[in-house]
Amino acid sequence: MIRVALVQNAPIFGDVSGNLSRVRSLLATRKESSPDLVVLPELFASGYQFVSRQEAMELGEPSGEDGSKPGETVSFLEALSRETGGWVVGGLPIRRGSRVFNSSIVASGGTVRAVYDKTHLFEAENRWFDRGEGPLCLVETPFGKLGVMICFDWLFPEVTRTLALGGATVIAHPVNWVLPFGPQGMILRSVENRVFSVTANRVGEESRGGLPALRYIGSSQVVSPAGQILARASGSAEELLELSIDPDLSRDKRVVEESDFFRQRRPELYAR
Image 1 (cartoon, rainbow, N blue to C red):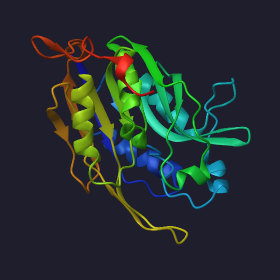
Image 2: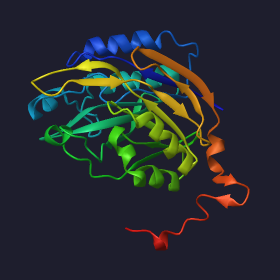
Image 3: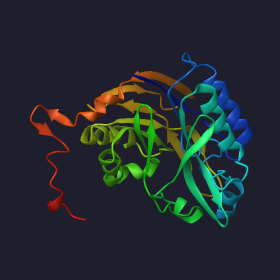
């Protein structure tokens, strides 16, 4: 069994320090001091509704991958992983030279272990961010392989399937969901791949630069390989969810005794 914590927050656009302070306050309420996995939303400290690429560049942070000093949000994620002794996944804009990505950091032991750049950009993100070039993100952990995808990636079933085929037992899924069908859709992704999905969303509204107003639907959740909603947050409040899961349940790909999802695949018949 591993202990999981999900943060559902309501960031104010551009107030990185203030947003991080609020997340610290939410985390301070946790009952379990040493979760094995903490998942935070997509762009959880910057806010989501950018109105220009310049804004994305200005709020973009160095990840420290090249030995440079990491940005404020990256340092926060590193420190949280050191404090908890667990693995931490959270989303932020990452800047590399003249490029900027909607990314997620995976940290443990006070160190960045992986950076995943969002592969499938949603709506205006295509104007502000560069598209991730892969590979998809799988990280070895003491509780098995951890897969990472970001928000709109979920609507491309190949992403979850590829992570599951690669051995993921748990998929961390930072999101900024505004579409209503995401929470229910992730039930299917968990069932068809027999994996745990841990989805962290935000709440609140943003209306900037004359763009259509965005209302975030919350409903952060953990879904079992059998499709059970093990925990789900509200649609409007900041919350911290805590629960225990058994990643080993993801290793059995049978839906019934003689029907194994992966053994019965027929990839030679599928479109490429």
